[in-house]
Length: 405
Image (cartoon, rainbow, N blue to C red; front, side, top):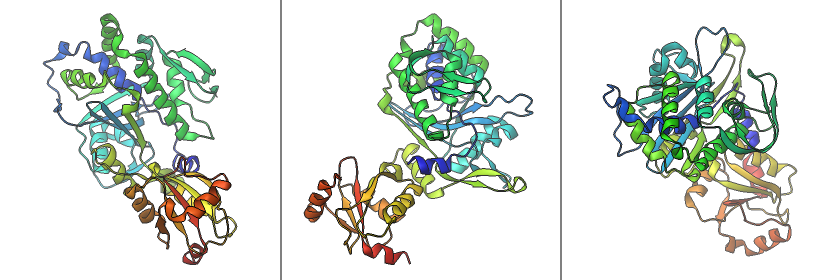
């Protein structure tokens, strides 16, 4: 899974200011009535609401600020879904040209970014919130910091400001919290960064933002006014915040738009992310439309070599990872004389089997239940291979090789 994500994630620094959506909205909720008469957009509150959230970079000397962070928050009672868009993703602009999505804010502000991303995702996004590094730091500080467990030391002298966070459970101030979600290493890349961002959200939810005193919340509101640009009416922020106040960590879903890294000479566009249209459409249906759609990363696969062809299981696993599937084990079957290739359906989820066959396995794989291959299941168990932790076990037989020629 990490290998495929690393291919997709050769983009530069990308920050998800997820915490601010939660913190800022809740802060405003304490004094939303102050601005009840504001003449700005107000969404219907009895349905799912989509909000574009942009985190602006801070580059000394830059003539225009680009969005270093882009995600769409889909909000409903007891349910928050966050769809991250890599900032180097290639999208079409209204004039027909193709540019990196983070240029939209620089060219036409939040309104152009809203239009471009709505068109790209094929779903109308009416509302936006824009915030910058300074706002993030100060809001976290006004909350008294955030306590979480830093699993390993995070150090990067090249960022501005430099990141230097020790391992262990500790309370992070605003500067440290910003460094925590900005940090990116060469091993886990953006996958590791996304995990840390989720950990920050969960820490904030556990900490109980809503229990802050009214005076502290009023300070947060005052600060938020300086750093948040939005077309949401304050009363709407107030009501949206009510949805978030009782939210639990398990009610937050985070996904990222899939794509492939492409590098060309600077005159031809340089390096960018080419989005996968099919997988993107599936994610939009699942995350923003609330449809019950199975996505590839939810299908856990064990790939076994049953043909004896050297490296065949590894090659099939790589194929699946490139398609976004979660390969949890690669190894040998109990024997190498399988003439037939099998998909052993462990969990009985027909949608996952259908997705696997449609997307990657167009050869003559035979779908079977574990009880139909009881001898095989017993033989695999002697090798230490079980169905635990997997939806599917693939056995690559001798027929698979012939279909690839």
